[in-house]
Amino acid sequence: MGIAELVAGALGRATASPLFAVGAAFIDLTPVWLKDYAIRTFGSSDKLVLLLGLGAGIAVAALALGLLARRWLRWGLAGLAAFGAVGVVAALTRPTAQILDVVPTLVGVGSGMVALAVLHRLPQQASTDRRRLLLGGAGAVAVAAGSAVGGRFLLGRQDVSAARKAIRLPAPADRALTVPPGAQVRVPGMPSFTTPNAAFYRVDTALTLPQVDPRDWTLRIHGMVKNPIELSFDELLDRALTERDITISCVSNEVGGTLAGNARWLGAPLAALLREAGVASGADQILSRSSDGMTLSTPLDVVLDGRDALLAVAMNGEALPVEHGFPARLVVPGLYGYVSATKWVVDLKVTRFATDPAYWTERGYAERAPIKTFSRIDVPKPFARVKAGRVAVAGTAWAQHRGVDAVEWQVDDGPWRTARLAPVPGLDTWRQWVAEWNATPGTHTLRVRATDGTGTTQPEERARPLPDGATGWHSVVITIT
Ligand SMILES: Nc1nc2c(c(=O)[nH]1)N[C@H]1C(S)=C(S)[C@@H](COP(=O)(O)O)O[C@H]1N2
Ligand SMILES: [Mo]
Image (cartoon, rainbow, N blue to C red; front, side, top):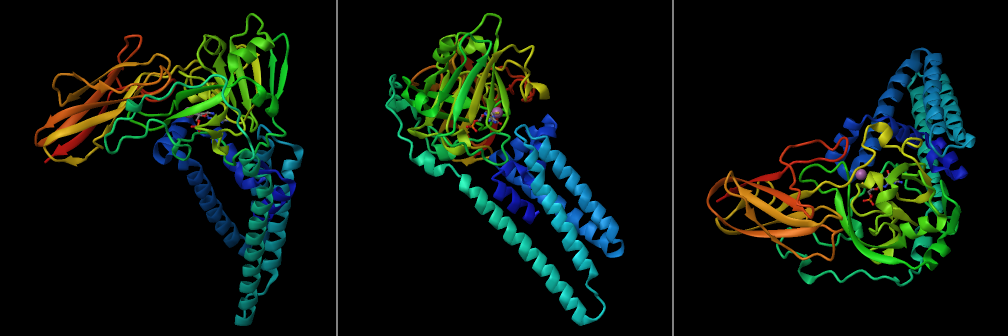
């Protein structure tokens, strides 16, 4: 595996490393309940957990093969060949696969076989022989580790962080409104109204971060259009850019969850680009594709209805962080990320839902997924112990593009009371709320529900994220002392 990393590095093909190819294939084959469990349990560390799990599984299998090979070398070699077959299939089934991508696995498995055969030949009777075997084994481990480090180093040449730093962002042609100072509720423990980039949630299937150099980047707009467009990054920066505060959120977010973030985005209005391309009648979907082959589908009518759908290049005043889609991504207010927020976007195909299903729709998620009205209690934290008297209860609510019109909260099964809503710059961001509670000693349950701009109140009934987003009232249990 170390040698395979080195070869993948020499080829400059991160996705051809067998470890990553098998991990990525595993992600694609993961049933949605397991994926939801992983996101719920490990959040943005889900990929690290996957790689560690895979590494542990491979270590156990290698140990078993090694023991087998002591007796029957042939079986050990056959086991390695089976591993190789899995690696080759995984590498070739990646959406961006090239035939070259089998080379790291083949060379890696070949080296493994040679190492196994050579170590197997070393006699192991006398204690001097044992020493030779140990030295031979240690040598093989050292070569493998050195190769793996070398491979990672070679892949580092593709790192685009220098190109990212060199980007000069143009001034917006259409500026965002100033965020009202009161948008931030001043209660300790409240999240910040604008989420710093480093704290922004991350959800995607990319086991290795796509490194897309803006000098090589183009966006193709094609399909059911009269004039297909191909846009370079410089051409994108030359367009009249719009700046907006928009909250995006993930369909996998559970009741009370934190898979949402609010940022100030800068980007080209998507509707204008589509109008230049001239959308043909009969089209109802934009199938967007990222450089790593992910596909997302977005309803065309939503993008064209006047909301600020953006082809974004910047987030909170800097070029998009690589993990958030550098050099360009989509942001559409009001739609869950999996049907709108394509990172590392390179291709927009104007088409029909009926003819071009996207990645998550093929796995059981809804075709259309407007964000559901959501509210949560951020303070006090669940199971907090708080002194009796005046207690601040505060939280966050969102219903992007419909706006949050009311938040109500309740102690135990008492009457619903209205919370004070913080001001917001528009309908497309989340909204903080706060209330004052005269808390009496004992254990209490606090509950919250929001009503959106269409007058619809968040339903009490709990639903899981699949197929189109979780619902239910959020509650926390706390103890007043
Ligand atoms: N290329 C690509 N873009 C993607 C995804 C992905 O897996 N690959 N995941 C989507 C999902 S499910 C969400 S919720 C948002 C998350 O965006 P963020 O990671 O910047 O918060 O990105 C979307 N864009
Ligand atoms: Mo998501």
